[in-house]
Amino acid sequence: MLSEAIKLGQQLKVDNIELRHIYPVKFFEKDSEADLTGVYPVKPESHLTGAINPINFATRSHKARMLLKLPESSKTLMKSFKSKLRSQIKKPLKEGLTAKIGRFDELEQFYRVFATNMRDLGSPVHSKNLMWNVLKEFGDEAKIVVIYKGAQPLACSLVVGFKGMLENPWASALREYSRLSPNMLLYWTMLEYACDNGYSYFDFGRSSPNEGTYKFKTQWGARPTTLNWHYISLNGQVAVAEDSEKSKFNKAIQYWQKLPVPVTRVIGPRIRKYIGL
Image (tube, rainbow, N blue to C red; front, side, top):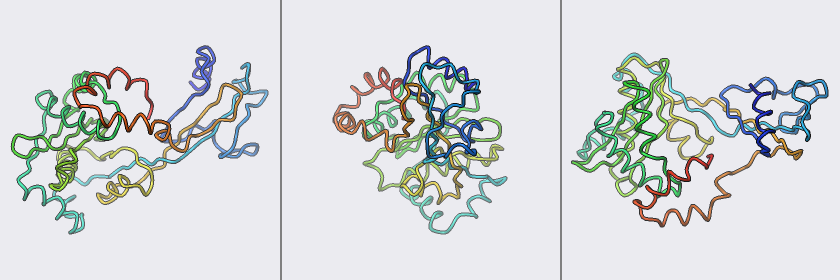
């Protein structure tokens, strides 16, 4: 597969290929002739030779997958939390917030919160049609969670179950209601659902070690697993792993944050598919 990916990259005349893996691809592992932090020239006898330019590559492990092993019941999970975390979960309930788990019936409310939060973050939003298709293709394994204050949606997430694991690819909350802690009730609702519906693990998604989201996830008991991002250069240059992809878009982010949400819902899906984050 790696060989075919490189051949395709050469045919398309791309400069680089980026591969993201939980476990490292053996071809990129450190050996006697290569340093993991450096450039790996392809050996003359390698099956990857034949390119016009030499193929160089580098590996970067700057992100961690945050995974929580679940007990058999949500009651057991709640008892395992520290008293501070339990109090934080109870706070939104005392404020009158409620949680609802649905599917297509909650899609519009989900997308309202999701689109607003993505605008606030300065990132183009995915299309609602993508979310609709996720719900359709994954069937009952895909659910939407929405946190309400009365009829007002404050936070939301979309979860997908697969082989004993419940994953959370998208979650958002409205900043103006952060004092009510809807995010705490949102994550507890997802974890409660996962425990009580037979899932063995909950995947919080990836984070950068020691940043805000990383610390938020570890308080629930999530354990980090280092991720491996492989960068392959096809243009003869040194393969460079960017320190911050986001920094290249700083100006665009600032402008995007000033746009009205309805405008971002129209423009965002048209350009989001071309942006890799």
